Image (cartoon, rainbow, N blue to C red; front, side, top):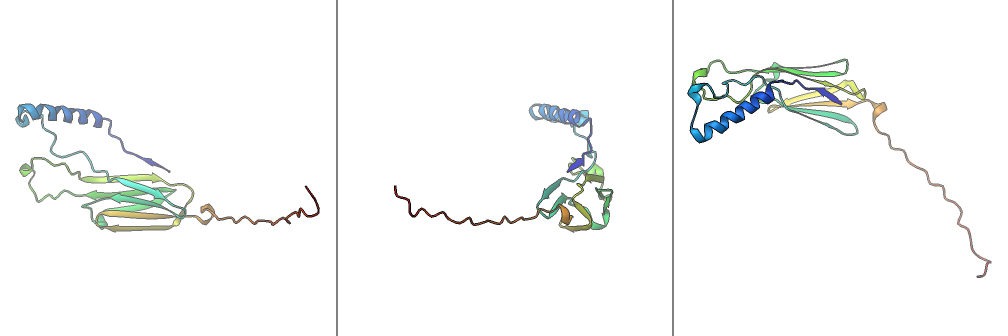
Length: 164
C-alpha cells in the first residue's frame, strides 16, 4: 500500500531557521522585536495517520482533533481513499492577543492508493473523540484460506522372524 504525502520543499529550511532563532534567543534574550520570532500561524494542517492490516481488514486511523464530523468528507473512487476536511480557527478570538500559535488550522486532504484486495462495497468509518477509524474489508478471494493437510498412515513394518 502506498500513499501520497504532500511535501513542502521549504520545510527543512524553515526548520533550520527556527532552530537558529531558538539558539540565538536562549543566551541573548528575546529578539521578538527584530522580526526573528517564528511566524504567528503555521502553514497548514495535515492529520497523522496509522495504517494496519490483518487477515480480513485494512484499518486506517487518523487523528483529527478539533474537527467536527460534518467538516469531514471521505470518498473512495478508483481504489483511492481520500480524506478531506477543515480544522477551523476560531475567528472570534483576536490574533494580537496570541504570542504563539503552534496548532495548525486549515483545509487538509490525505489520499491513499488502496490495493486490489479491498472490497469497495464493505467500507466502514467511525469518528469519535477526534479519532477517525476507517475499516476496509478485504475481498473473499484475497483472504488467506486454511488448507488442512491429510496424513496417510502407512502400515508399520513388522520385524518378526528376523534374528539378529
